[in-house]
Image (cartoon, rainbow, N blue to C red; front, side):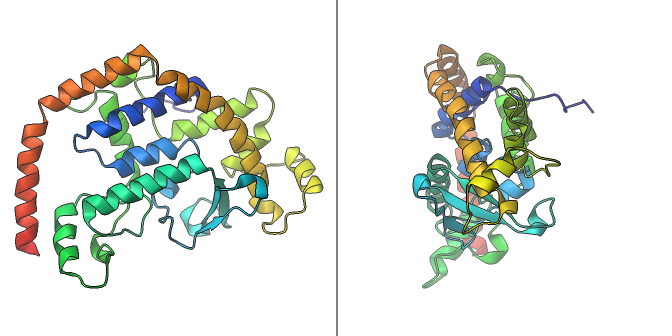
Length: 297
């Protein structure tokens, strides 16, 4: 096992990774948009993989509008204590750009499954069976409970492995665009820590990652300056949002620059070429699965 403790991405590298995920997403090729969507928002929702992929859908009461007038369009999500490595609830205000990705994933999931999932990042593994069963349901457009599952943390690693060419038939796109060949979802949490600690603002990283902070830090100034009428000081929602804005100001310009990078266009062409040799077989398998699902239903 290699030591991953020092492995992290710079804002420029995260911008390139997001651009790469967005560029390969429309190409298809047996990619669940929930997996790519989870990877895209993981830099804005820096929770551990298990807590991220098991978030509930936007229609859940776990989501409430951020009450701050300056954060119109932001929404606060709550994780229960048993869903995170903590003894209390965790709250995070999620910016509109991430909400748009969650809405996109929800539309994709409903189109694929023919029904609405409970999860923010649903599996589509049994989509043909779900479609067949959903067609028989009346007055209920929900995915049957026994088939309604969220993607797994390992699916994020599998998607990154495919981008790195560690799956048969896939080229190494990470190296092509100048990224490390080995990237894991947890690296983005370390990236947040590295970013803030580099200019002496480690308290923001501690808040966003929900690490406990010992001693006095900038949180004490924030609590003294702001009367939080909705959230307790322990939630640190206001402080987290302040840190998130700083983080986004570093990553988003890098993402815009990466979209114009000629290396990205080269990576897309390589993925297209790989897909050209795979799609006929995938379509054949898809038709066979659809026939089996109709028979089971």
